[in-house]
Picture (cartoon, rainbow, N blue to C red):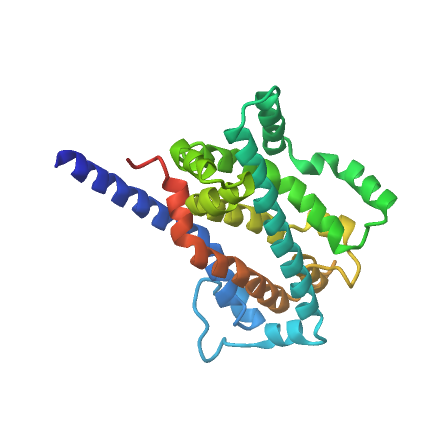
Length: 279
């Protein structure tokens, strides 16, 4: 009975800490959203207060939606993020399955090589990446961003998913093989459904850097046809004058997809983070 009580208390403490961390992490986003509905004077005079009848204003959103470019930037960000997430989860899960399931010469070396992608920032290779994209004619295309983000996200995906796949019962997989199931069927129908919390964790941690990235869109896709939301918001920031109403409105709209994804995968995300911590 005492063991069960300790397990419940640990679970409660873990969820409480995650809840407090979520509140602290979301507070800056909350400030951006409430200030996007204020006048310029109210933003600087009382940034922590909620908008009222005197300070409420939609001028920032009117500036953002004027001309319709923002919807196009939003579409570019959505395409790049969704496709990058799909390929990161697909290739990362397949590589993790191979490393955790099969024993072959160079298994450990390959795992360590992929882990280097977590320790070494991809931005250190910016010059080489830019030269490669110029040589292949992919500059100012969404394909260039997708390739870079897939390469950036696969090491973390392999590192996390391989640990979860090692916990999948070998008896279950062997039973599938005895029944005549192929390796792809075992992977997609038996293994992937059992590691959904890990997939949700990887998806959230991969999406946020991609959606909020400014570095690679500025270097590889800075034309009007390929601008992302984060890069498009920079048009309201000038050298001498900044339209803070429009900047905050654009950032508020850019935050929404991340919040929606977090709400959708929050349960799976918490399960993935706390897996193994509470027994």
